[in-house]
Image (cartoon, rainbow, N blue to C red):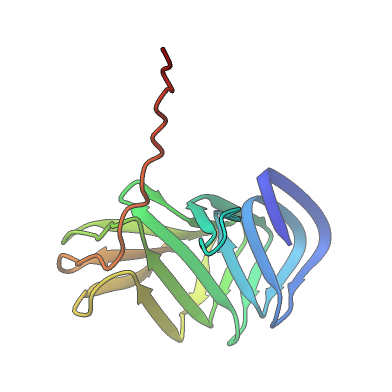
Length: 181
């Protein structure tokens, strides 16, 4: 299920199977939610290239996904979040309680690396128990240290040292007018 443009889905129950995906930005209203597969807030667009031999371009834009119910993450669940700046990163908001489990993947991109003492509040819940069995960090050189905490229903990452990016910023679009004489 992919939500676009702040879309909204209402259902009695949300079950994301082990090979399923809940993607995008918007709101899912459900009586309850069980997650066995992947949850990835934000916008991911693949732009195909029409030029032969040229790879397509992927555009990733952080966003917020809201699940209006209690959520149970299972041992196979994957929460994948993109971080592009201190004020530009994916967020998962769970209006009810959350049972945390599975894997948390944090993708640092666009050449961004956190500095010591930077804080990211990725997941907000009405109350949470449990913890992620595994945390995977991509887009940063080895040696980045962090503290992952669950306080008052909020999952927070605090950088304990400066990270070193392994990604590059996307090239900015440049449009030049064509002038003819």
